[in-house]
Image 1 (cartoon, rainbow, N blue to C red):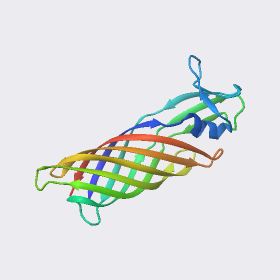
Image 2 (tube, one colour; image 1 turned 90 degrees about the vertical axis):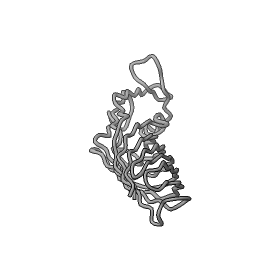
Image 3 (tube, rainbow, N blue to C red; image 1 turned 45 degrees about the horizontal axis):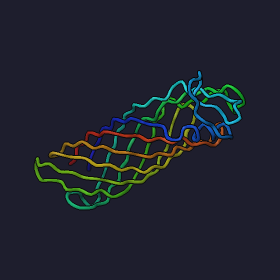
Length: 194
């Protein structure tokens, strides 16, 4: 079993499509040298993104039901992580005047394959993993569901280790209209394995 503390840097992915095009019901494109960041194709609605936080933290526990010392094994991971705060305002035709996701966190469960070469004692060992999972997204404004794929690896000396992980997350919400938010969290994890 491994316990981790995660430092995440979250990047938006396809923000003009998900959530902006989903919310406005038409294609949205990024603009430059304007006081706003996006506009609809017809030019009638301008979108100003005033906040998108990138830094977050998380906690996780990974269980290896068949052990993990050398070779491939099953890994089951549960985690809680912060979600980015998003604040955007719409100037023009839109279903709502603003869009906010604040104080968000996600609870996830994943399963996949971990391939290890862990050394006995305090020797240097390594591992790599690929996981897929589902979860729940909770914010002050709305709750939703999510699914994701994650991959990464790390090094360990004795019970202490450091991992780097990359995740592709699709968050789905139903209010104010059905929409999705795509994120790419990149995390550095401090791990304790026993």
